[in-house]
Amino acid sequence: MIDNADELRDKANEYKNGLKRQFVNIPIGDEEYGFRISGIGAKSVKLEKFVKFEDIFEAIESGNDNGLEAMIKQIIEDYEEDEE
Image (cartoon, rainbow, N blue to C red):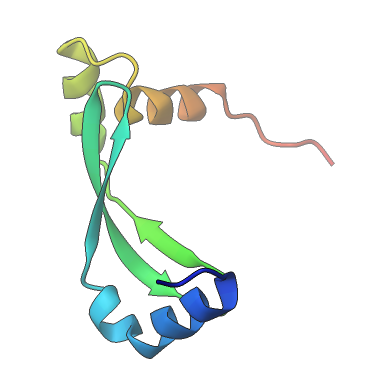
């Protein structure tokens, strides 16, 4: 069993090509979403998920107002450029 970050990083980097084809399911709200491991680096693992704009509205219209789609919609709606 791996019990420290260095060993975990070393194993992830050793097997990065195979790991980058793996998926992980993460519960968000009432739904479970599949994310792909898309990158493994020296300090982190990158997860990736594509969410279509149509899927955002379909999920919200079907009552999923606390899932990933609703969160993404809220982030986009609330975003404002920083003034420099």
